[in-house]
Image (cartoon, rainbow, N blue to C red; front, side):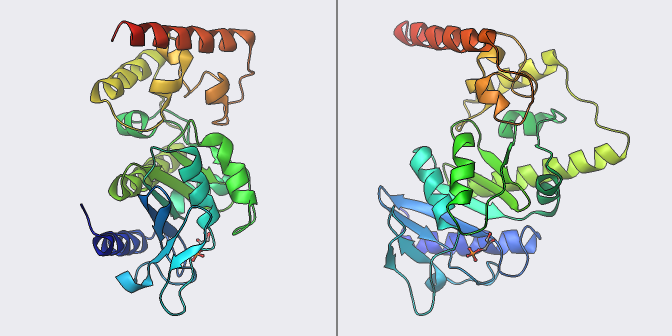
Length: 274
Ligand code: 13P
């Protein structure tokens, strides 16, 4: 088992990475790791995440009560947002919040990252919606992020930044890195006359690859009833789980039917041991 001290060192390493890669400026950003059912390690508030050492890292419980903190260090002002992710996503073991330049620019412009333009982003990331603006450090952010958590592994925070989470700290960091790379490509291709998007068949094949890899997390390939039934995906269909991504297609009875059919199919396959 990895020791608590070792995890604190890993948090410092990831803090340095996000700082060095200009995903955060000055004292921005925060990182947390779930270490047991009711214990979390997190970065302190108001320090540069690029220059932390293990004694900076705080320990809290699921309500945000401080279990251990050295000297003047206090848990991140955004810890409520992290705790909401852990509450709603028991599969998540680490959360990274940063302000990467391109992803945050899309969050400021109000453009969700839903255009299917490159294989890695479609396979690993899926769609990235924008949670409505909330005042930093208040309950507004966790409350606004909540509805996206069951369907997505990364969320943009309107006029603020980005949030990524996964089943390990490295995976959560990688999600943030992929999100920023995808946003950067999207930004540049929009300047070059607009990206050429994948068509329905190409998306279907990429989703199939994701299923074959058995990648963890929540993704339209696993959640979108329409995609499962061979139809359009979250990247463009607007069924209930997908419309949360900011795709404006109205939710229709057909979508509800598709949801029900997918659920029944899943149960039947489960019974058959498939
Ligand atoms: P903390 O230093 O309190 O974690 O806040 C940084 C930040 O980026 C707030 O959004």
